[in-house]
Image (cartoon, rainbow, N blue to C red):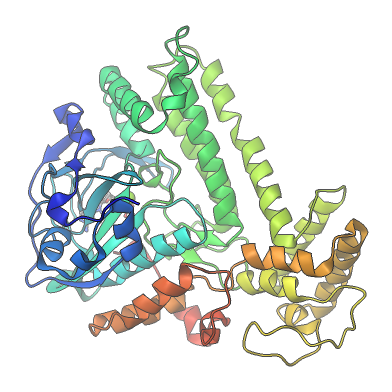
Length: 511
Ligand code: AMP
Ligand code: MG
């Protein structure tokens, strides 16, 4: 176990600053007035090898509020471009993000980035700030995704201040310290392709390969374009797996623009995201996305579209289109394979048999038509009794109730109870045919189907408390969502379907 250190003792570098100067602007942050650490994340500190006691010290506040630079860092904001809602948007960049440097921790290098610490040359019409509301949402979501085992940027600290920020109404400012091995986006590549700088494109690709995808250089020798094709293929595969991971927990990103797509296949830039409550395949979590470009069902195909944009920006490095096309061709098989594996685990199937695809499709259709709660559907399926068990058997304690005939907690989630019952009968017969012990199946399912997810209303309650200076609800959620599949006594209300008022929460790009 590596020794824990204070901030000034951390080994800090900034490899991104070694790229050509046109990739970024060195600059200072613009501190907020009287900032306070509202919450700090010991799990993220541990990744850095940072002494958790430092989280309560003034030196920590100074860094995560943007008051002082990270000792040994080289603060900068990066340029990138991108396609927003399917349209080329030209130059964007870190309009409100400052890369403080890169901590070489016991688990590898982590870039530390402040979001909301003031204007940069890439701010365009923006004010360089982030409001508390969206900062709480980003802070919670990244750790909730981590708890679910889904690749994501992490969050180290949430800082709040009284500085007013003008959105639809006047809100207050906050700063989130994010961490990732790299914040390079698809749009970082698109930028140099659009600016006709193949030299810079190559420098960026080499940088990403050397630091994050060294296997792309193998086998050594031969075709000089091979590492770039391998890079594309690796990003295609990671992105396909990410999409499968999102889909099966009902996560909607909301703004899958190419500038929000991580080159490492991480969930990046949490804005108007949402975990679905009632399942609707066409669910749109972003109030601003009127056409539903980024609806739940569209996410995999949008990711594929974004990967095609990435591939076309690599054309200056790879002659002909065949190799790039072949790399892109990995998307569908990896997505389908990953979805299948995940659905098998979610349904507790030990193997994949003829007819399983239909069984799974019919469950999705049923959940969609009946607007069944996404999370509870899978969770209650685990608790449904086997064919050999008495239908009046009491289910195990999960949602704080032990009462009720065994079949109903699952069936009750569907408005069409008869159809749910008929599907459940098919499912029970399918599992019986497999010969696997019913309880063993249930245990496997309970280990992969979360009971607690970051529902919008839960995030909203944490925001409302945070606005009053109370971080306790953030703290509760951080602890709960770190282990989303484990029943935690006294936490029944966090597992419940949302209250009626939750239907009226609207999230938009405004942040
Ligand atoms: P997003 O889709 O929210 O990730 O943001 C798209 C672009 O707008 C990025 O280049 C952001 O840096 C920039 N941006 C968003 N909000 C602001 C803001 N308040 N001030 C400056 N730039 C912003
Ligand atoms: Mg963004």
